[in-house]
Amino acid sequence: MVLTRDNFQQYVLDSNGIVFVEFFASWCPHCQAFAPEYQQISEDLSGEAAFYQVEIDQSPGLANEYGIEAIPTIKVFDEGQVVTSFVGAQPQSVFQKVINDLNQ
Image (cartoon, rainbow, N blue to C red; front, side, top):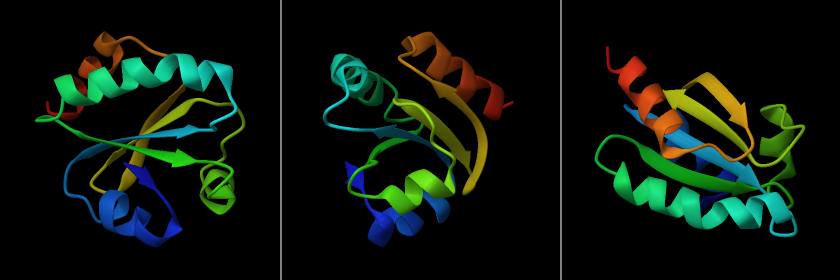
């Protein structure tokens, strides 16, 4: 699901669990290449975390607020707070490690 300023609070900041948010742009070739993998990761780990996206051209305020300088950037939220982030495509093992570390 692609979030905007209108629903970011509800789905991310008010969440009681782990949320991954990919900041991306539709024109970005790295984002396009990572899109199928991010979709698969979100399906594989759906019971352990929530997965959303923010299109930086549609929501530049959110991109600025979270200091997005390169895309794709993944921000990881736990209980509504940013706990870590990473830039660029990452394998599923990175997402799983973040989940495991936060659940300890």
